[in-house]
Image 1: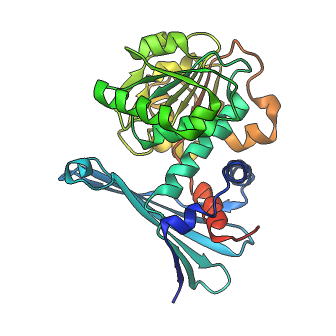
Image 2 (image 1 turned 180 degrees about the vertical axis):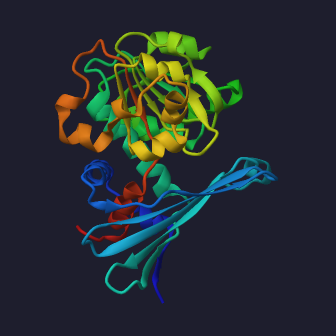
Image 3 (image 1 turned 60 degrees about the horizontal axis):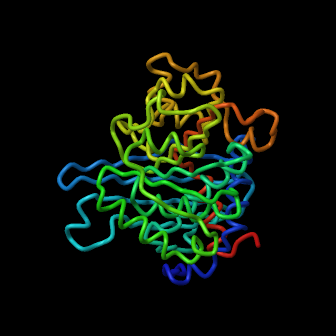
Length: 321
């Protein structure tokens, strides 16, 4: 029988700074073509509404391969159960045998997604961040901000969401977060996306929107935007013209983002040429490709790639140190 780790046991294995570095290293491996990552599998449900993402792959000449299943069902709140669930399976690359089941309840997926936001901010955010803007009110919105501590030197944050009640709850939760308290960050609600954009030059979008929320005209000179939400076909948070306006568009995976990320919409309507999109691993490896000054507008399109799941599963498993 393979070993099974519960969420409590998994959390004890994760060191946040080391995790962020492992995710960063993974992006480089991916862009160096040292990882085998097949296309994402999707299951979409209508009644009740829900998405299931299946991601899998391996690092070449490594010890393991990984398969991750993660779900999100928006009506779960009405049932009094968590929005998301998930499991990661770790197999031997030598025998194909299942060695470990990580019943992480989607926590590892959330953590590796937030870690990707931290990696992007490390490499693309302006040197002087006047305000952090968080668009969205779910768990990922909270985690994105929490993992920016130590990456971004900023004292002010604004949160916007469509539901004012959820914005209030999100801000309350963040203010009670020990990491945020230690940071000394001031957190307030923004009345609109436009207001948030005028006060923030680092913006993170974390919604499941299916139409643009952030418009090109909203964004001021020198802003960086990390878009996390468009991880499936039909989703969109940024106006395509915003990517066209940007001095730099960076994708975690060019092939994935052109298929179902923000880049899909921008390439489809001609705002961006696919050939102009940079891949995150290459920007990490060659910093000269990235932001060159604090006047540039930069956009990172993150759809989530299996190398993130591989890297964090190895950490949770105690594989590779």
